[in-house]
Image 1 (cartoon, rainbow, N blue to C red):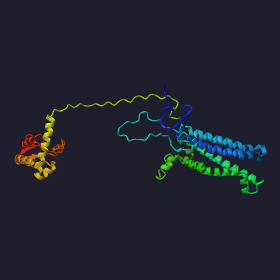
Image 2: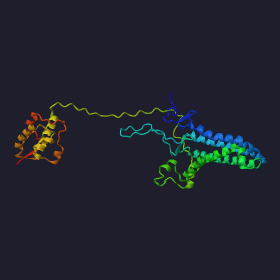
Image 3: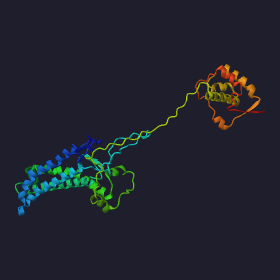
Image 4: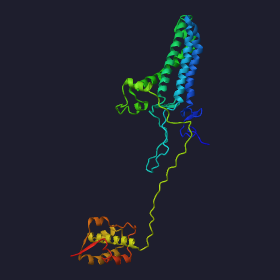
Length: 372
């Protein structure tokens, strides 16, 4: 049975409702974030807002305190859900990655368009397609904290005007209000700071990654189009559709053509054939060239790899009698093309080689002789 894209997904994302919703790899942190929002609001509605309902008798305006808290909380949770369950702009993987042997090893990563950062509180990366909702979420959470803090402080003020003449006694009369005020004050440093920071980033059209990565480089921001245009780009432009069709069926990849290699079969050379004879002659010619240039028998013994001294001197005496009456003319290109003993690491010369070295006709393939 054919699988759908979300079923064969190679990333660590979590899918629900048949691939309609995509969460990040740490989606479980959403439960912590939701509890940090819902629990304080429940405490507020039960211990604070319920007592403020009758504090505004005109038009029963006190009910607005309770209704606003509930509606605003639902609004924040919806923004959190949209931010977390939305494709942030994942770039599809290449169907045929390069297979060149010289390509360095790379990590298997998921790339997002206009990557901003990864937020563990929403369990999702923030990118092109959910940045707008992320900012609305943190800014709405900031306003909710301010609202709960203000209403809790207002309730303490009402208590001070009745049976609790001092602030301390009023705080003892409503400990829930004190706890909510402390909690909202601490939370404001977090969500309020995020709101202010991302407000600045939007004004200069910059991402969190770019701000931290290139802050010390003092690079010119080429994406800044002016404060107004930057805000319009974030809030008023149409969000691109997802590049991934998670509900579609996986298509069979076309097999990559197998590269054809052409091998040239080289026939085995018969031992003692022409090639072996040419290389054999080159080695003898190289030996004679060194002998004619240096005429240092002791140095030649070390340079040629420690040959037997008696055999070497015998060869020198035989060859010098012939070379002394002639000049050996070797060009630079001929010297570069000589083979300096690359066939073998063994420099022992057999009696046949010594006999052949005495004859200049054997070395005439590479050495040009000119009479005096």
